[in-house]
Length: 353
Image (cartoon, rainbow, N blue to C red; front, top):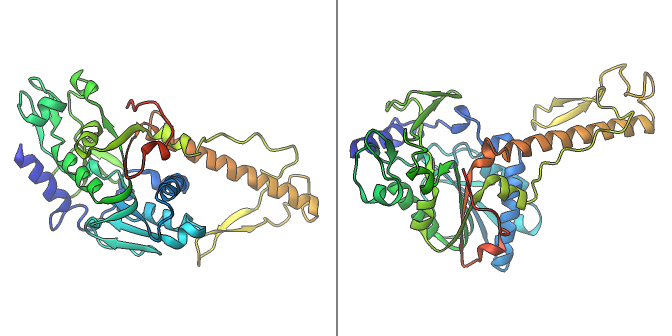
């Protein structure tokens, strides 16, 4: 039992480990911060609610634990605006090499004190833990995941300790774990009789090996983590949480007749900023017809078409984040520290992965 945890830890965090040498999850599987800015926007709204509940302190922390390439921390920093942005300190925590992300501080260990919001986004699944085959007796298994002869399980005790430690660093504010996981009633019922230990490399699931060549992961017993950290907490689905934070993902109505969708200007990346620069194809004009794209009316149709496309793309990204068969099934474990959870999220249905 101890050997499997030690091998897992060495493979990820040893001197030549997968994460230690600088591999990032983005290179090996699709993760929510890569889909678009919407997750960061939702977390900023949650952070603003924390900020309000704390009385708008002089310094407000956003801590991204297991930051990987810094995508989420960077998106939060760049999306923040107004007075909140002026007081916001964004910290990325990761064992890998520090990334150059504008406005983001980088460190290898958890800060000792956090006033604001600490987020562990797909962090706990990468905390190594013992993988066992039943029959096997262990206090944690007896409480959270009884295993029968031939069944496999992961002993989540190290995840419980890691999350309890992270929550203890929040002096005032909230801590949020976002991960795929399972609940005791499903584990007891045998839904995960084969365990959940898995490996990913280059965007594909592969056979787990302990040589540092792949990302090793397992689903998280979020209910056990919640109890270990204690305090006031809720465990809800990502789908419901994002909906409560304003991400409904409603598709826009079809554009009005004549809106220039098919002939909208192309977007050419600006080599300096990476942002799109509108360039209109020569001779195309707008959907209104040849030669009609130079007037105010034609430009209006182009603008309407582009606005519709942007809204449709955003709705598609939100739908992916809230897909009940995919990312929407993630669990959101939210602890309030000196802040009532009810001030952060409205009552929502309990999580059912």
